[in-house]
Image (tube, rainbow, N blue to C red; front, side, top):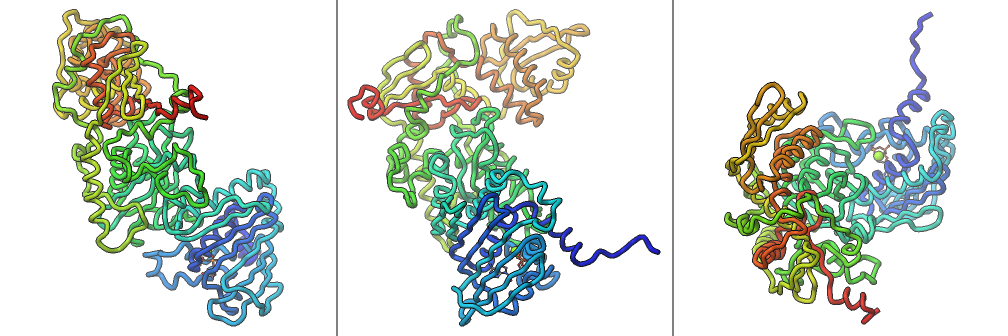
Length: 635
Ligand code: ADP
Ligand code: MG
C-alpha cells in the first residue's frame, strides 16, 4: 500500500482556509474588501463578542446574480481575475478567489444578495462550506453576509483564539484599517450593539482620519503630499511634538490596500531624524498610489505584504514628502478642516489654515498651555559655571543661516512637487496649488513683530509676540541653530588646535571605533593621533566648542558610537554633531547679552528652529487666554 495519499477536497479547504482566516478579524477584512470591490458607497459592519459568534457585513454594492452566488463560495471562484496576464496588474482588493471558500469552510454563513437592477435577490446558507439552503428572496440591492461560529468545526483553531476582548480589538483594528484606506466609502462599525466608529465617506482624507482616529491624533497631523512622475503619496504625518510610544498609529496604504512595509516605515522615520525623541515614533496615514504593474500584491494570502519594483524611488518619495511636510509644519493643519459630526471643536484645534496670517510662527499651534505646564525642561550639557566666550551666539550667525530641512540641500532629491492633499483630481488644479504653497513658504519665514522682555531663571527667554507670551529654552534653541548650521555645511568643519592637548586612555573597543570613524571625526574637526599602544591624543576640536569641553565631548561621542544606534554614516555624523552643538551652545546659568537673546528669539520666530536635535521643543507659548484662565479672569 502506498504511503502517500491525496487529501480530500474538504481537508485541503480547511488547510487553505487557515492561511486566509487566521482569526475573526480576518473575516471582517475579507468581507469588507469584497464590499469595496463590489463598488459599495457605504458599508456596515456589525460584530458581537470577539467576532467569533457573529459578524455581519452589509454593503450597497453591485450584488450577485443567483448563479454567481451559487459558485462564489467555491475555491478559486472569482470575478476579478480571468487569466495569467491579469496577475500582472491587480486593481482590486481580492483576486485569489479564496476568501469566501475559506470563511465558509470554517463557519456558518448566511448570504442575502441582490444584483443591481434585478427584481429579486438570493438567500443562501452554508455550513462548513456546504450549501444548506438557497432560495429567492426580496431584499435591498447589495450584499449582506452573516458569519457565525467561526472555527466551530476546527477545534484546534478555536483553542488558539484569544479572549473576546483581544479578538474584538483585532476586529476593530481590521475594520479601521480597511475604512481608513477608502475615504470615499462610508463605513460604520457596530460592536455589541453600539457604534464604534463611522466614517462619512466624503472622499476627504482629513475627515476619514478625524472620524476614525479621533480628534486627539488628528489635531497633531500635518498634511503631506508629493509626486514623482506616476507615483504619488499623500496623507498626513504627525508633528514631531506628538511622537508616540509605538508604531500602532502608522498606517500605510498602497493603492487603497493597507500594507506593512519596512521600506515605507524607514523612509518616514528617517525624515524625523533629529526632530523626534529617541524611542518615540511618528504616526501617519499615507496613501501611496502607483501603477498596478509596479507593485506585486501576490506575496501572501493576506496580501498585507507587497513587493515594489522600484523601491528606491518609493523610499525617496516618501522620505522627501515627509521631510517637506515637517518643514512646512506651519502650513495647513488638519484641524483646520471641518470636523465631521462634531461641532464643539475646542479653541486649540481651531483653524490654522490659509486664513491664518502666514507670518505667525509655528509654536502658536504646536503647544497648548497644558503641554507647556507638563513640560519640565531639562538642560542637557552641564556647564553652568563657565562664562560664555562672549560672542558664541553671534559667531554662529557669521555664516548665513541654512535650514537642514531645505530640500534643495538634500543630495539626489527626486523631482517632487507639492500636490493637493485632497483626493487626486485629474486635471491641472495641482499646478496652481503648488504655486500657492511656495508663496506661503516664502512668507512663512518673515519674523513677526515682537518685544524681547528678558530672561528668566538664566535659561528661558521671554518675549511678547502679538497676543502671546513666548518662552524659549535658550540652550535648546541655540543647540538647534548650531546643529543645523554645521549639518548644512558640506566642507570640513573648522577646527581649533587645543593649547593643551588631551590624552585619552581608550579601551581596545574604543580604539577600534576611533579607527573606524577616523575620517569622519577629522572632517568634523576632531584631530586624534595614536599615542603608544593604548592612548590617543586629541589635538584639535571643532572651533565652535570651548576647549574645556574637549574631553567630555570626545567621551560622549565614543559612548554614542559605541551604542551604535546609528550604524549608517549619516547617523554617526549627526550623533557627533549633536554633541558638538550641545557643547557649543549657550547654557543654562550663563549670563547672555541681550543681543544674543535677540538672535535666538529671531531664529525661533523665523519658524526654522522648533526642536532641539534630540527632539525636545525649543519654545512654548501662553496666550492671553491661557493667562487669563490662570488668573481666573475668565473661566
Ligand atoms: P475574491 O475577492 O478574491 O474574488 P472571494 O472569495 O472573496 O474572492 O469572493 C468571490 C467572488 O464573490 C468575488 O470575486 C465576487 O464576484 C463575489 N463577491 C463576494 N463578495 C461580494 C460582495 N459583497 N458583493 C458582490 N460580489 C461579491
Ligand atoms: Mg475577496
